[in-house]
Image 1 (cartoon, helix red, strand yellow):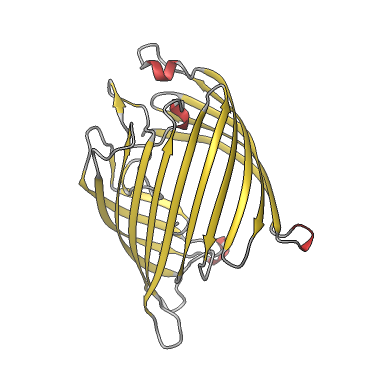
Image 2: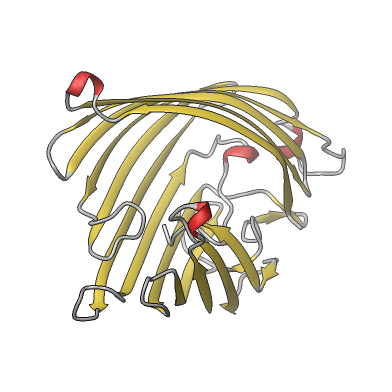
Amino acid sequence: MPGTQLQRYSVSFRDPAIFDSPYFFGISGYYYTHNYNEYDEARTGMRVTVGRQINEKWSASVSTRLENVNINNVPPWEPQTFQDAVGDNFLVGMSVGVTRDTRNSYLRPTEGSKFNLSVEQVLGDFTFPVGNAEFNKYWTIWERADGSGKHVLAMHNQVTIAGSQAPVFERFYAGGFQSMRGFQFRGISPEQNGFKVGGDFMLLNSLEYQIPLKANDHIYAVGFVDSGTVESHTEIRDYRVSAGVGLRFVVPMLGPVPIALDLGFPIVKGPGDNEQVFSFWIGFFR
């Protein structure tokens, strides 16, 4: 496996309307550890967000994150990019973003779209910018006369770019449920001497068709096509494509968020990619 999450702790608070105003506030703290093939990571941090709801569709926010990222267990034969990150790394990220949201549901949208654009400048032991743009769109293709049993086509598009000075633990990797099914978590990445070193450019695209199998919509099937790439520079050299099918189960005692089971099969692969047919997730498409 490319990585194992050993532990994760987080606590968060969000007020969507401070003193009944159009401003919102959020704060979170977290600690988690990962064991990757290339290194072990322990990340401790907090994030504070303040924003304003401009109208029914648009909102804007500013956010600050403070993190300490400890990288250890790096063998001496790994590339220099891993050696440069060994030890504690302190980061301060300051970002601004705008969002346009017309979805008819936060949990399972069947109509509308969501667009988010953000820019972050990271300072501290490493200095680099990050830009991210995401667009999600949902169409109801068919529904019963009473409005239930909706067949939904969901689309996701994302492009993310980081500065060339981003450390290995802040670079991009793809693979897995919310990225590209049919590939392992972090299974898509540029390589150096056989080690996955992450990329400074990531492009992801997905189409998913959802078909309810029960009248209460607690079980539904999906078919999907995922595609995209992770590159060392802003270019497209090895564009991957995968396709597959899956099931979603809503367990009432666990709340409205479904358990997702997918089988994905790579159609177009890049050099060194790690495949994984089965993926498991608790959550919706995006």
